[in-house]
Amino acid sequence: MGEGRNIVAVMVVLGMLVVLSDLVDARTYVVGKKDGSCSEDICWTFNVTDWPKDKNIASGDVLVFNYNPSVHNVVFVDEIGYKTCTVPKDPRYSRVYRTGHDHIQLPDFGPIHFISSVKDDCKRGIKIEIR
Image (cartoon, rainbow, N blue to C red; front, side):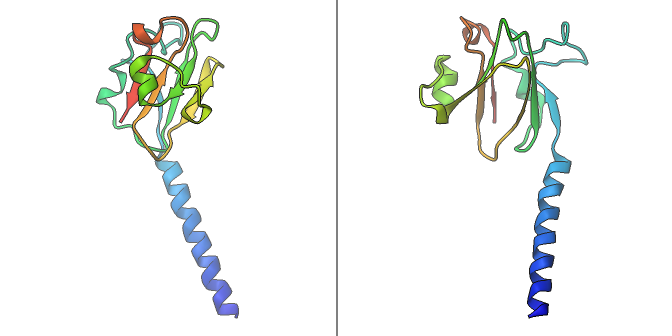
C-alpha cells in the first residue's frame, strides 16, 4: 500500500511541474505597444487591429490593456461580435473589462477576439484578433 501512495505522490508532483512549466513560459504583452512606448501609457486605442500580427502569442500568455476607462473598455467577444462590433447578449460569449489596466490570461482555445464597445470605438479600429 505504501508503494501505491508513493506512485500517486510522484504523479501529483509531475503534474504540478507540467502546470508550473506552462506558467513560467507565459509571456506578457502590452496591447498596442510598439517600439517601446505608448502615449501616456495608453496603448489600447485606435488602429490597433494589426498589432498582434508580428507576435507569437500563445495560450497562457497575458495581454495587458492600458486605456482611459472613462473613454474606452475591453470586451472579450466571439467572432461574430468581433466582425460586427457588437457585444453578444449571452454572457458566455462576452466579458466586459473596465479598469483601464486589465490583465487577461489567454485561454487554451482560439481565435480570441477583443473590442471596445464604447460608441464607435470598434468600427474605428479598437479591436484585435489573436489566432
